[in-house]
Each structure stands twice: as structure tokens, then as C-alpha cells.
Image (cartoon, rainbow, N blue to C red; front, side, top):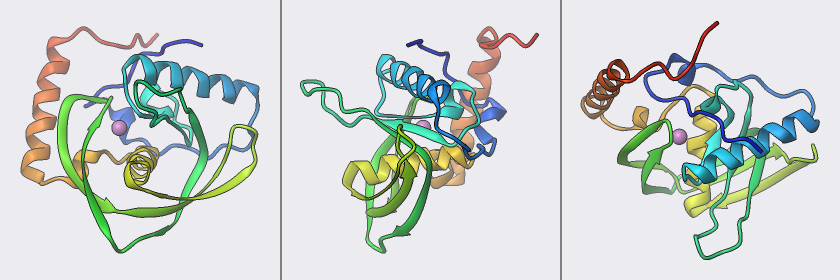
Length: 176
Ligand code: NI
């Protein structure tokens, strides 16, 4: 497993639409393992493939607490089938927007269809933190960030700050 560099705001890759996977094979499972390794290292509780520069519809989540055994979950081609009318608010952060947190309101529960790491079709109804995390990560697959759910004023401030930081920081990717 390899820890990959994270794509950080304002990298335009974060706005790219990720492509559905046609098959679940070993290279894809290897990518899922690299994503988990990168997420644990950060540390974070969820990561979408685009956050390590792969525009593919896959995300990983692990909501186990520090003193619990790891519980990695892989979601391939996830799709929200149903969202509850009831909403809930969580303070969210994002590995691509380090050290920024804001309260986001989303449907409290969602029904999601996906392929697991064996390529088997699964359906789950998620609520609580898992519902929020799934929606946050599925947003990434559509080029949407959690700051798109806060006020424009706050969003503009964050984007401005990260643009300035990017200017002061050496390029994270070599393009050859
Ligand atoms: Ni994120």
C-alpha cells in the first residue's frame, strides 16, 4: 500500500466529474488500498479517488474510533437512491481543504446502491455520521465540495485563502 499525495483546493481536479468503473479488478482494489492508507495517514474518515488524482467513482470510509479495530469500507459507483426529508447538521472538514471546518446541513438518512470490493451489488440505508460522510464523498465524485453547501461569503473567503496558500507553496505535482 502506498500513501499518495492529496489534491488540495484550489486544484481544478477537485471540480472534475469522476467516471463510473466498468469492472472491479485487482488494480482497482490496489487503488482502494492506497486510498485507505492515504486516508489513515492524514488522518481522515473518508476519501474519494479524485482526492489522490484519480477521476474514478470510488470512495473509502472508515468510521471506527481510535480505540476500535479498523473498519474499512469501499464504495464503487455509489448512487443515492433516496434521501430523507429529515435533515441533520454536522461540522464537516475535508482532506482537500485542510484545517477548515464548517457546519453543513444534509439529509439525515440516505439509501445508497454501490458495488463492494468484490464487485457485488449492495444497498444500504445510512444515517448519522455515515450518511453525512457518504454524501460528502459522493459529492466529490461530482466535483462538489462541502464548501459549496455553505454561504457564498464564507466560501469565497476559504477559496481566496487557499489560492494564496497555493501561491506560497511549491507545486505539489510535477507535470512532465
Ligand atoms: Ni472531502
